[in-house]
Length: 297
Image 1 (cartoon, one colour):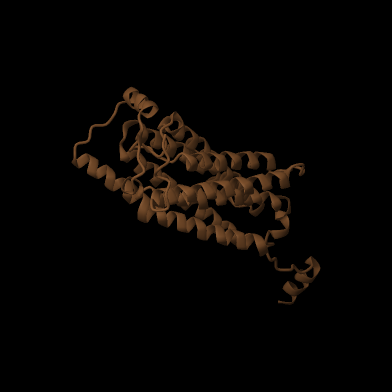
Image 2 (cartoon, rainbow, N blue to C red; image 1 turned 90 degrees about the vertical axis):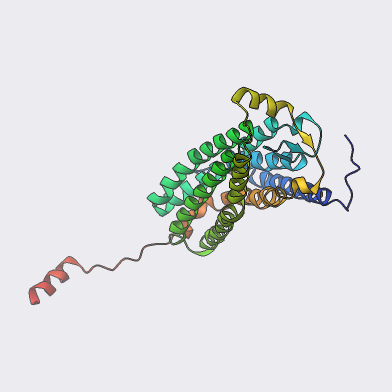
């Protein structure tokens, strides 16, 4: 293993230093949250569970930041078995499922206080959807077919569109700080969906079309499993990483910050009733007075 590529003239090295800095900052933030929540009483909102789910995502993304890889291409920065697609994809699967469980917990609690069937139903749907997306991702890395990545990211798009629908519905059920937080979340989700629709999904779809046009052979199940366990190609060439850098940079920074913010929801989870918007009711006249008015008519 050599490190002569770690120079300020190599864009890949600068990018890797950025990933390390962000991962370190995220771990510090998670540690601070863990200390803050330690010993807090639990209610309907399971603080320990949210901290644990957040840890899986924060440390999973930190691992992937230290040892970046592109699954289908089998390219890595470091020649170690920890860089294998089998290890990396397993870590990613656990982290991503934990991340969407965070969203489901928060949406379910908000929907409960808002009495929103839409929010409750979406909270139940998003975890199964992401499990299907993870299966598509594994299909892609085993067979080296970008069709799996196209389907995976399309499902992520649908999932966050549903989350956006739930958030818009919940926006009008709360007021004050919580309404502002939900509005910011809607903007963040909209930006993520726009990125998926405009860049991520088309990129994988075009790669799949190109492979089909070139007659690229796909790996079978057993051959693919052996391949993801044993084959990786070390490269520090910017040309090999240029298409991966944008989405990885956003994924290992902004996405992790959203997981940390979801964890922070525990700070106000027990105070949601204070932020719930009360329905205005029309005062009713006493029954005797109503009868008198009707009699006069």
